[in-house]
Image (cartoon, rainbow, N blue to C red):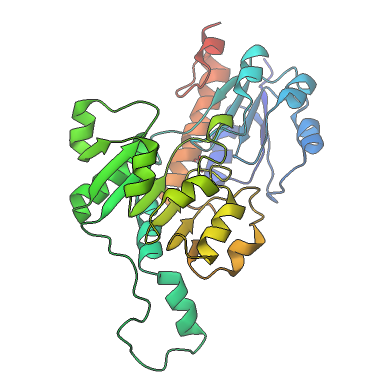
Length: 327
Ligand code: GLV
């Protein structure tokens, strides 16, 4: 029997390709080119499966042009690159890579919070530029972290990981807003209190965004929301670009309507809204929250397991539209 063909749409660990090669005819992308939609469609011809990153959009055009496709496995927990309804209608399974990155991503959320509050990159640039000539009492004085109020918007697994770090490690007062309130047990584990979005915005000293991107979370933080925040507050986004209105944020930072921001994700990334590159009170990182080698390996392994499980036994570990698997 001939083996299924799959496409690995972005560069990945050689071990992952070797493992997939035990089950499939694999077309890889060793140069790590980010293909256009028409290139992706061309590469997907005759493929039963695809291993994707968040940059590969799977939409109605791709699905209509690739009728042999059965599964798309994302090496990411977020899956806003999938039109999941269209995939379900086309009978294509989508999978993501949850859980394996939770703690690593929460670590990074905290790292970005600390770097933002304590002005780590801004002060490093100052030092590297040879501007450090003397100590002074208020040089790079930042925001307090321990004992302050940590606000979390989006209280899934990663949000809870950040809450635990804040409450137990830094004695922070944790408040959160989410589509639904956590169970009393989970709230107790995170020492977190549910509040309205308005109270969250008005009260948080550090506001961390960890909610999924969708049409309903587009610009969840725009000019009006930023105006509710304290002028001393710091904003951290490790969720998705598009959740923050980057243009409104750049204005708020420049006019010091909030103190600082830490951003790992951007609207239209890898392009960054130009004004964000010129304001000093923002820490910018290139979408690396899950980037440790063990975690990236675990994400790649999970995406590979989903492809192998589904195309060889009809079962994936982390299906997003399990009705396709059942059908
Ligand atoms: C990264 O952003 C992910 O969704 O895994």
